[in-house]
Length: 443
Ligand SMILES: Nc1nc2c(ncn2[C@@H]2O[C@H](COP(=O)(O)OP(=O)(O)OP(=O)(O)O)[C@@H](O)[C@H]2O)c(=O)[nH]1
Ligand SMILES: [Mg+2]
Picture 1 (cartoon, protein in one colour):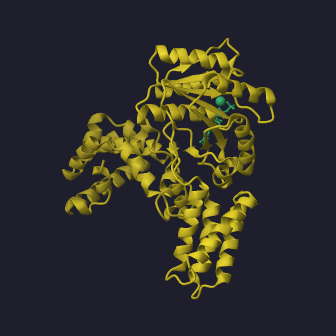
Picture 2 (cartoon, helix red, strand yellow):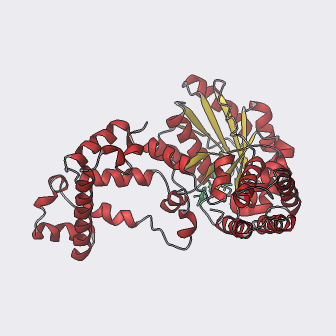
Picture 3 (cartoon, protein in one colour):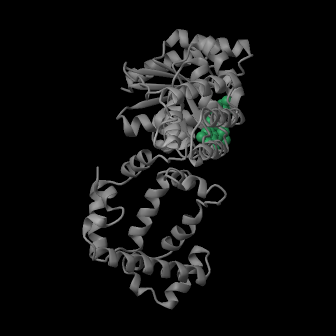
């Protein structure tokens, strides 16, 4: 994410960090580099200029010139300003009201329907809500199907009226339905519309007027850079939305949308989303995003993701097994599944400070686990629990069943054995020193 911008900023700082003596000129040069980096990331020139003017002013005011560590001080100033630019504080997401009504709007293909599903999943699993998804896209029958598939996947009911072409009455009926079924939040997915299409803009404005949503979220594809910002302005004028959702942050986005949108419409970014898995919705924290952009990683989010997946009781059970050297293939499979639920591997690794840029060009294959899972799946439960009983003839069968060749299976079993002997060694260390254990136990 924002790889290029991160690198450019880093090289801007490198100059000032390497200077023995800091002068006004050094600061001016660094600031100029930062501005160029922002403009190249598709941040509007005016925003970039205002941003760097502030950084410069602060740097001079903070007497970076006299500081012991001027480079670091500059980084800190830029970090604070980036945080501010993206909204400063985490914003509130209002789900009071019974039902709370959330209206989703945005351009065609921006990710509204996918986001609606993710939001429903988030509210259900993290906020203890019982959501109802509402199919308000009356133009394409396939849109209703899509929402139903997602609803099924996450166990959330979908309200639709296939014959009704009026989104206003669908939304009103959905509220009644929610009340009768004790659903306390409804999420209305709408058809994608072009800002210039007056008829369609009026339609979503009419839905707003009729149902008075607590939250109107404008969904924007972050790959679209400054265009996204212009569209946001047009939608905001018409809908006065309450917040922005940045989608497709997993893609090769330059960062312009994330950095300019709050400034332009003065509405907070509330969520960001990456990937197509229903679990990959994140509350947007400007400070953490700024840290990620500056290549500092985002260890807080990573730990949170891990904690969400690692059940404390499960972790304790696992720890016991590792201690007794009883870790088996079945346990391994469970671990793999938990990691996969956390999201895309490369994104996860990017959250580790310093790792992001090192894996920039490395293909991190999410399917790597698939082969391993297939091999474990081809084992009988007895074999998974007692890896020692896997004889050569059993290996033949397992390899065949998983579509792998024997060499791959042997390699995997060998790696598994190595891992186990590492665990055995760690067992001899005092618990506190065992890497990872602190994280798993905490909750
Ligand atoms: N990589 C990636 N793809 C996404 C993300 N969100 C959505 N998509 C994909 O983008 C495409 C469009 O997503 P939808 O959710 O259907 O978008 P929409 O805004 O509802 O589209 P319309 O209803 O046609 O206006 C689909 O192929 C999604 O799978 C994301 O965060 N990352
Ligand atoms: Mg849609």
